[in-house]
Image (cartoon, rainbow, N blue to C red; front, side, top):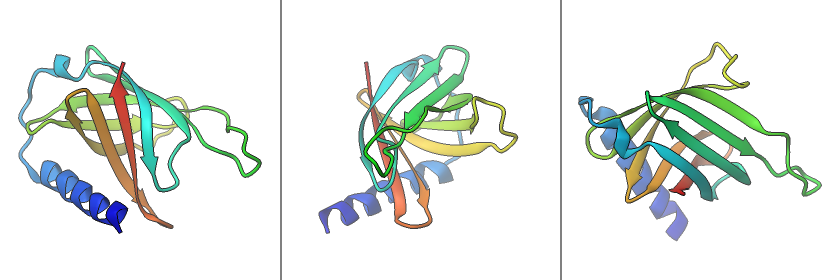
Length: 133
């Protein structure tokens, strides 16, 4: 029940940031390397996020296989933009950047912790938390 209420609060935060008018802010506040710290739902087992000067973004993750081993690495490449209210908008292309589909995410950056969430058809929401290294 506690996890559910935390997910509801996080979903509300994402919706609040997504509904605001974006204001360009200093991207340097988000630039850095982040390591996956926690995941709710069926998210990745390991991963990293790099927010690079110039607005470039790279997400690398691996998933736990049924036999306990890790999958091959999934790489998504794209761009990020910092908005007001500690928001970070991500536009990523999976398959190492070759996918024509743009995966749009809104994350929250708070004191070196980047939290992003996205829907999971089976479980509701997946929330990934990355900590700046």
